[in-house]
Length: 591
Image (tube, rainbow, N blue to C red):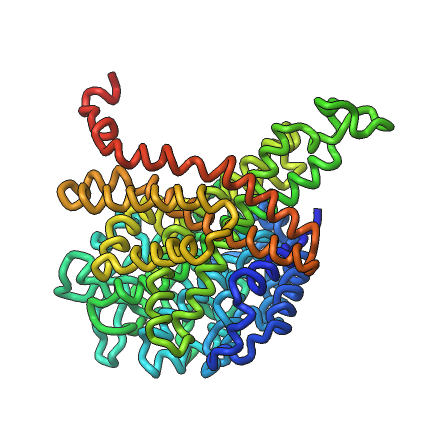
């Protein structure tokens, strides 16, 4: 089926719930009027459905092709034309800085576009998606010369960018990298080493690819404190000479086959230092945090497409009769959407998708406030929320994005297991999002091990201020008591960690994943209460899209009755500690 952008839900969230229609009142986003934001939503939806989606199945079946003689990569049929239209529409420049040819629009709008692109072709969306991280790192940490050399062409989409971090012997533990950077007399560096799993490391969509490479300088500490970041172009911008940064082959993957995932060999390639020596990790996290939010949108995008496919199937597939009597008396059977178990699956998809979208756009809105609001206190509080919620967005949206795609496959039954329907591809494509840019276990450890203690606990205090402030200021909030219980559970879990984790880091490790999930469900509960409240007010006033608003009230009830109660056993999991988790000795495993 053709993708239908969730435009009504997006407008409801951005304009009626989050207040993002007021971003144009901030000087930095003066052009982001409600009319412009609505136009971006509509045009991005058309682009996704008409240009990007038609390339998705071809990309999966053809995959990328590697030529070992030329060490080049050919993308699937249709990718070059779709990418060209994406670039010509200015989509690569949407939220990029004005001074280098960007449009300077809110980051929230990029979140919207990311979801739509990932719904319709995750593989194709990877090429401009990773480029954006390279842009942000160079803009934040690069010298003026590097910015002038690279940013305009990266922002325009004429060139693409990569993030070259992982090596065969190390992924998360980047202190183990072996790639070396040797100074040259002209101020550049000679880069030697091998990187793996490099998205867009080599392809035919553009003429030049700009690699951002982590490497170690001579004499640097053999830890993460000895890592530096370098920009290493495929072709040298001044001379056009081919730089010896070559693709050594493509990874063979279960999904995202249209995305060129490369082994990259740097054979004395010329590079330039980004930022200060041995300060590469700080620059890398600029890329990584942005990439983590983008990957969260990948999970949401795939979940939305899976929901649309499974809903369409459930409305048309005739099988058995309703338990309360025929709903389709003139046909041989009723559509399967009448069956409670099918509706449970569809409702879980719908309600989680809309809750995850609310969480993502809430975080995107806070990101915009953190960089553009004139009040320093507002900026700091917004930044607190963005830092705290970034691992939550990445992990929860990709966990549930995959789960929802898998649920969608189940709705289709045997049809879902065949390549005649798109669900099996969505499941395969979605699986990687829980792994790359830091596995979801790493996201949980980042939340518990770093974010909770950052700034003396200020980040989590800011979140509790939002949650408790809402409960205090909104005594008639829909589902107030259920939300209050979830907030209390999150407070208890946070206190348990504050008491036990400092004494035993394994307690933090054991609690990390359930704590992240507890955080996500609680914040989404807060947002569902807000959505239900806005829907009730608009219905009472006779305003808005009545079916959408009534659906919000039903969906909120489903969330609080069927999904939020999970917080109780998550709290129990956390408070039970590590003992049963860590108790098996080595000889028990294979007994």
